[in-house]
Length: 435
Ligand code: GDP
Ligand code: GDP
Image (tube, rainbow, N blue to C red; front, side, top):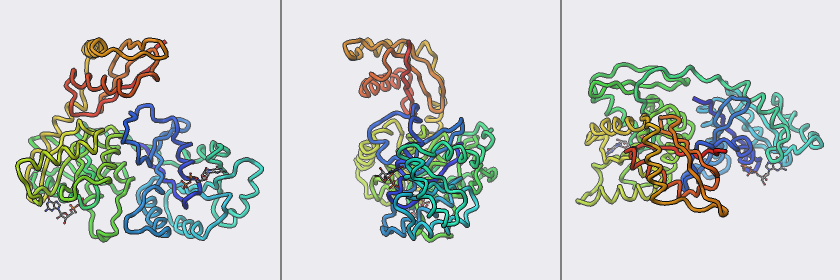
């Protein structure tokens, strides 16, 4: 599990420029599927072999709080609550704004590492703009230029020193399940139903982060770990209206899971936020099951479930391998079917396919539909092998990896799915140069 670092600051100080610079070149294992990356506010980064995830919290707006001050407040609160460290970006060109001072006074109370970067210091000659910022009384503000790279190395050197070292690997061989979805979709109802109806609740076990509590439940004689149940069930502290969707919380539990149960409110249809959450699960490489909840509220005829599923598949094309199920957490309808699906998906998710079988499938696929020419040269696919599981990832050696068109890649992925029977799990296909 990687530490999560929140990037905060006023609009236009350079948060996304900073974000892009630091996370650049770290997505080799992520498929570039159209539609997945449109809400990209988080990215993995590595510096000096230390991995972390950067979250640009500025990208998250609240529907009900459109005023700027409100944005800042919710941003900072989420960052404080959820991240492992915080980077506040200031604008070395624009100077200090009253909002900066407000933010800093809140950050002073934070008991986790906070680093201040004064951005747009585009070289030594600009260091004079730093003077003002010393007057803010912050410890060690770093001069940086997100755009040109000045000062970034020193900054990152110090950042990784203050990050918590990753917790010891999670030992157990239980299937780990995360429940994700937007507020009010029915996550806590579902968890309570699962934990309540199964009499063999073993115990609550402390999770790896400060206040994550995982629960173990036993279904059909098998133990499952439900991730961060406390975070989802804890209610009443904040009123429902104030409850914010926390991307950091969602990422954290998705990072730790094998299978994500993505809960949607069927009464609301499929919303953008649902698709965004599904996109995170997809990018994290989780096995996914889509649960259309509150099915008891839907007026139905024979074709209703089919129409819902089609809408879902249509909007979340990148997840078209994920099984879906209509349920009611309230009445318990079909909740007992969830674990059967979890077993199906997990089996595929953790599978290894033999190299012989893989290459037979690839040969047939290549013969059936020849790869297109590249600059007058023929693409050659040499050899494919599985490099990891959870989810299954395959490396295919090619003479010109960059020349494989995404539509041809999609064709090969589909052929691999068909040939191996891996129809319900995400799979990765990575092309590598063979010289
Ligand atoms: P955000 O709203 O905080 O995400 O800010 P952006 O990253 O979108 O940057 C806002 C503007 O500041 C853009 O026009 C950037 O090109 C500019 N900018 C960002 N970083 C730097 C920098 O290091 N130096 C200079 N001179 N401009 C920068
Ligand atoms: P969460 O924010 O995702 O954890 O959602 P909750 O579990 O708190 O549910 C939000 C609201 O939807 C509550 O009033 C629940 O009683 C209600 N709810 C949850 N599941 C169902 C369901 O299957 N059917 C109906 N009718 N209501 C539900």
